Image 1 (cartoon, one colour):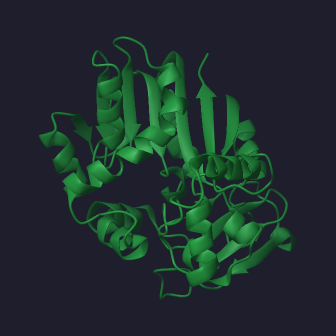
Image 2 (cartoon, rainbow, N blue to C red):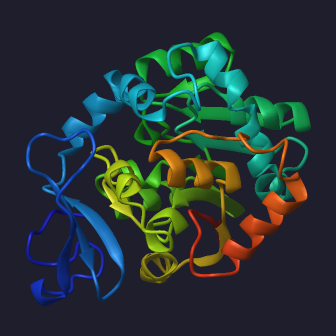
Length: 303
């Protein structure tokens, strides 16, 4: 997907359909802006970083960037703490992926981070064969120390096919998403499934509650592209794949109330002693049934 200042990089709609969504981009001081294509509802960073710039960032600077941005909600400074804290992310995603896991299943995770997803799957079924792709020098070394076969980029895997390919919050950080996603699809064995998760620009803090501080936080230099359901459907149809889209609300009441009160991230579980988890789950379920949710899960099937 090459950069074009006049046309949408997804649907190629002309300049009359392009509008500036935000002139502030978190982490940028070079004048980048966020554009929205009103034809396909696709959001994109422009000027787009080159692939070389993106590679350098994820190999060397991503952990520090995320540590500054995430506050106390996660620990990016210590690989072991990061792995332990993010086990909650495995539990949140488990229902979407374990239904596709079987004995001796070949699983590839792209953007495997500290391995919390792969180690969780290995606990679920110890017979599976796991492989990781992780560009971060720090995280890839940790994965290798865990005994996981690890590659820096998907292009480094030359001969293997997989039954299940996973990536979580990776797609938004890729400069050429069509090329990247096709490479993922090509690594699937016949009958294989790709499951991925990506942020949704219909996040209720943005599209429903319209919190200015969240808007300044949401658009970030590390996130090149942002989808809604409409633009995701356009992309998947363009690729010609069989797929299923699942709306998902990741963050709950405590996080949202904290943003409303303080204009700051965090707040996970802050009010859990007052509001029961059943209420929190109902709140997220209502959002998932609306047009306002923060995440999209997608299942792609190779026949």
